[in-house]
Image (cartoon, rainbow, N blue to C red; front, side, top):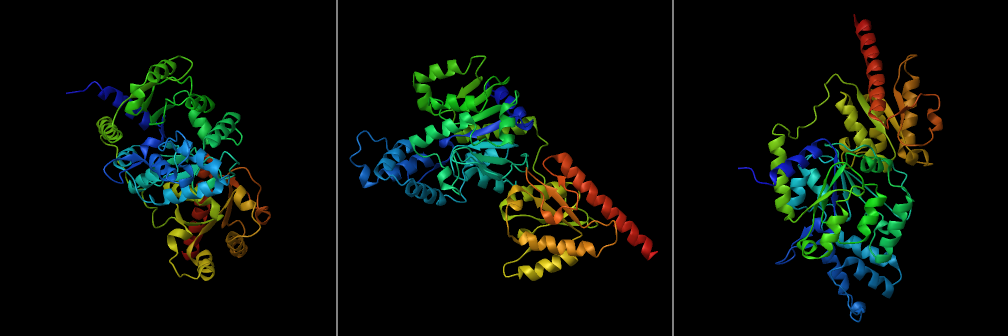
Length: 446
């Protein structure tokens, strides 16, 4: 028998399948049970920080409010880096952990996931589901030069809106940080990545908000700055029971039902139960949809070596996936080398004996560096190309993101791989040269 809730879950499932639903996780989505109770990590962190003896005399300290506690600590110790280090060390304890909620969410075909906490629960869940998630984050203090590729079902993007632990000063911890963060987002200085902006601005985009905290005044400012208002379809928001018990809930629901805001269906659900029910509803609508392993390139496929700056590994991993989807074999150092290998000796052997082409992935990170192993790779690749017959190609320079071309590659045509069309052009160029090579080899042997 169908329950009244099933049509809503099926409608949400269709939006997720179509790629029109953005997952937005608030602080209550990541929980842990240290003893008899289950609590959000942000609450556990706030309680731990509030145990600092210097805060014992602070009147009215809310020991469960991370921003309040962090602000009080900052007033006692103006060096913000000490607080940031404490937070980074706290989240390290949960490395490799996830929850049932995240596991069920990771089984669904979300492409873009925005989170307001620096934990890796969702990243771990996606990885365990056989996907290859990428991680990026906003730093309200400065811009990031690293470009972001379009996300996909197999390669979902997790975007840490309030910063991430790899850059501790990016974390939005205190009440002052929150104000500064909102000002920067409203001004778009530093700017949010174009892919994020484009996805959020689409009229058909909806969101699944999980404990984002709609009782907080600043959320309206943030949603307006992210240009999420005025969309055509209804979003869904899961909120804590306290939200529905307060009179503020009435004001919030009225506000988010106006034609110039965004329509939101507010729900009071257990997160684990909701995710289980949503996954079940999705399987009902799309019973044949399942995760399948990508097909291996045929044994006759040319093998491509990707040369890149270490900072660009997420970009390059995604490019490798897209080339393999187009039937090319890809040689990658972090997948093929074993601990203890002599890299320089192995590199010479790989470039001269094991691969058929070298693709140099030029990005602002690469062209901005004066040294790097990739310079040795490029020099050796160009040396091998000089020993080939006229017209044969071995080195294929490509560009990702806005940047200059390396002087060493000025004489070769570079292809932009910012779009799927660009990747198609690269794969076609490699395959055409490979076909000429194989035909020439067949003619020579006959």
